[in-house]
Amino acid sequence: ETGVTQTPRHLVMGMTNKKSLKCEQHLGHNAMYWYKQSAKKPLELMFVYSLEERVENNSVPSRFSPECPNSSHLFLHLHTLQPEDSALYLCASSQTDRANSPLHFGNGTRLTVT
Amino acid sequence: AQSVAQPEDQVNVAEGNPLTVKCTYSVSGNPYLFWYVQYPNRGLQFLLKYITGDNLVKGSYGFEAEFNKSQTSFHLKKPSALVSDSALYFCAVDNQGGKLIFGQGTELSVKP
Image 1 (cartoon, helix red, strand yellow):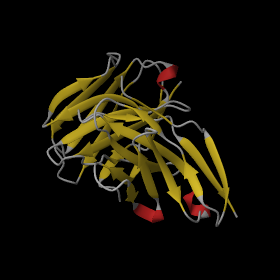
Image 2 (cartoon, rainbow over the protein chains, first blue to last red):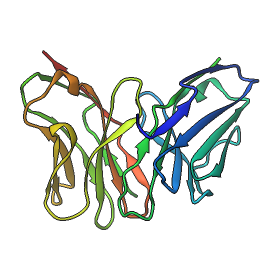
Image 3 (cartoon, chains in turn blue, purple):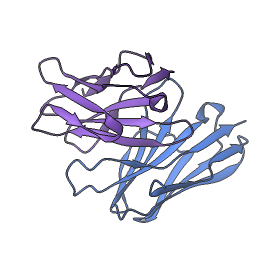
Image 4 (spheres, rainbow over the protein chains, first blue to last red):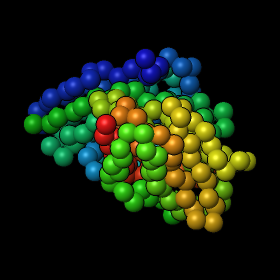
């Protein structure tokens, strides 16, 4: 049990579908993150929410839409994705007012776009 | 610009032998440095961090890392490798702006 739960674990979707990834953290943290992990590439930070406010958006295409309704939940809404969006999507949380607090990751959602 | 490099895509070690996974960084100011491990079909798990103080940092599962300011390195080490240590290892640097920059990862393979 990592304290950060992601659902679903696997998702296969067509390019015209709409789906959502869900993340929930049980650690009482105040910041949540979405990362994209592709083979042979460094982790790419996509979005950061701190105290439920989006504080970072790393030039992510608009077909990815994050939502953070409260400090424990984070969603990534997906629509009209491309095959190159296939990757492992990792959610993480941390406590930003605790200096150097490490990130706690979920196990990820393996997304395949067909 | 801040960056972190892991020069080896893969490291192969025999069980019982010492292991080293290399990491070098480039960041202005004093860096915060981290190591994470990723087992198959899992997210990343925090192993250890260097903030300040003693250059040798001890972490989970018997791992340690040595901060070397002159060489801008933060290599991960373990005196005696286990087969169960086989995983993907990520070095990361925080430039004190609260943003972690990850290396591309090193795959460690420990053979019996």
